[in-house]
Length: 446
Image (tube, one colour):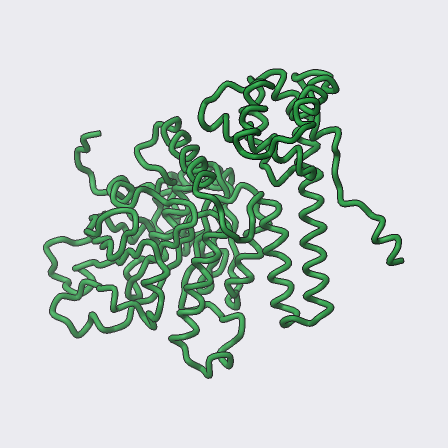
C-alpha cells in the first residue's frame, strides 16, 4: 500500500497548462479572460507558473504581451534559463488555437481545485489521527478548509501588496460600473446608506437597543429591502421569534397591513388584496429563516456556507446565542462568553465575505441618565463587542420614555461607531402597526 500511495501523482494536466500559456502568447486578447479564472498557484509546473506570473505582471502594467516581451520579462525576473526561448516557441507550436483558451483554463483550474482538496484532506486526516483537538474543533476546521477552497480563497498567509492592489482596483472598477452612490448593498434607508456606505462585504453591523425599541423590526426591514433590491439570498437567524412570527412581520411590513389585524384575522377585502400581493412579492425573494433557539456561531457559519448567492446574514439577537464551549468553558462568565461570540461573528463575516447584521441588547445604564440616548458603553456585557463591530447603530425613540413627546413615532438611528465614515444620527419614521421603519420624507440633492 505505501508503494502505491508513493507512486500516485497529484491531479494535474501539463497539456492544459501549456495550451493556456500558448493561447495567451498567440493572442493577447484572451489574457484578460484567463487571468479572471486562474492564479499562479493553479499551475502545477514551476516553469509554467513562472511564465504565467510574468504575463500576469505585464498585464497589470499594460505592457505588450508576445513571445519576445515575455522572454525579456523572464530575464528581468531571473526566471530565464538556456531552454526558455525554445520552450516558449514550443508552447505556441503545440497549442491548437487561442479560441479555446477559456476551456484550457477551466481544466487547469479544475486540477488545481482537486489538488487543494487532496491537501486539505491530508491535513484533516493528520489532525484526526493525531487527535489534535476535539472532534467538533476538527470538524469546524475541515468545513472552513473546504469552504475556502470552494470560494477560491486561501485560509490565511501573507499576500503581496501588489496582488491586493489588483483586487482593490477590480473592486473600484466594479463600483464605478454599477453606477450606485454607495459601494455596498442598500439598507433601503437613503440617509442611513449615505452615512455608512451601505452594507459592505465582511462588515459586522450591530443594531443595539433596549427592548421594545424596534431592533428586530429594523433588522427584518433591512433583510427584506436587501432581498428585494439585490436578488441575493438573505439568511435570517432568530433565537427569539418563530419562523411564523418572522414571516408575519415581513408580511405586515410589505403589505402595510396592521399586525394586530393579521394576528386576529379581522381583515378587510382590501387587506386581503394587499396580503396576496405581498405574499407573491416575498415568496419570490430568496429569504431563508431559521428559528433554532440553541444556535452557535459555528452552526450559523456552517449553514451559511451551504447557501448559494449569499448576500446578507441577519441574527436576532447576540445575547441569546450559545457559546460553542457552553457556559462552563468560562465558568459562567457571561461577559467573556458574549465577547467570544462577537469575535467569532466578525471572523464569520470575513470568512463568508458578506455583511452580517446582529441585533444586540443594551444594558439599563441609560435608564438612570437624564439623556437616555444610548452610548457605546451601554452595550450589555459589552466586553469586546464594540471593538469587533465595524458599525454600531443604536435606536432611540423619545416617545418611548415621554408619552407627551413633541415627536411621536420618530426614531433616532444613532451611529455610535462607523469604520466607513462619521458618527451621527439618522432620523426614521417608526410605524409600529406595520412592523416597519421608513425614511422621513425630505428633498435630496443627488
